[in-house]
Image 1 (cartoon, helix red, strand yellow):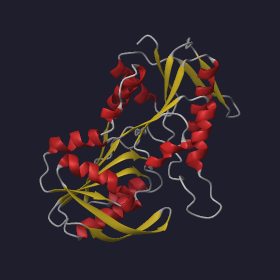
Image 2 (cartoon, helix red, strand yellow):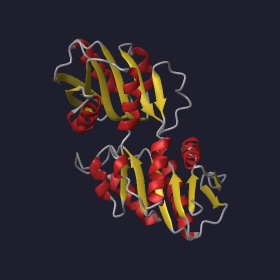
Image 3 (cartoon, one colour):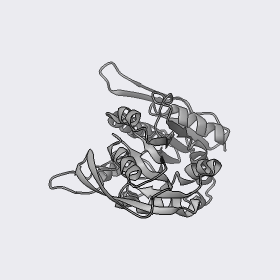
Length: 312
């Protein structure tokens, strides 16, 4: 492991430290600050020549600062003769802009993929992309992990009976089916109509949910409107208890206030793909760690071993 180095920007150094703890190595030393006018200042403070380098940096809020930090770190490592640079992006920002759904709009997910490749990344490691086809935006290898195993371990310990896994929209059926299969549970889908990018209207539920305990699964929660409407729809349909397992807790805008009012949601489970120091005290938000999952993936990539067993 002497050829392995793990660096971190300012987006989520706590996660990087937990990954290093799993790998039993020290977090590599880099200075990542800003000049007085706001430009990012960076210096790699140790030798990386010929090393296999991993940069842990989710592009979470503030996404532009964190993305720019990541690009600059990659550029510095490339110019320092690192043998291979893997961008570890637990939460891939700009993933929702993955297609032209309206005239004259960008495909920003593709732009970000191009920026990472041009900066010098040789490989991408990420968790639960908003759309799986984003992997095809890259001309370099992408290891796409799933947080399903982390959530399954939690729910199996609870031993909840009469489970049904609910997808909050048609696009999340594949993810919901993976949870339902692992939990030996039923499957339901909420058919909804989207009024705007930030607001949705739940229409009706496909599947049997009455007198069941529901787990809503999704890849990210931003303002929380979709989740709250799904919870309300499920309660009206006769569900006993509602849990939510969502990989990336962006929790922007009025999300926390909406969760406070959503008394029918028993627990919201999210991962630490995004830092949550401001929300840990919320009684119904529980943060599960993906550090071991990422650490094991990094170890296997470094040792040129198969990562496919972690994809389930």
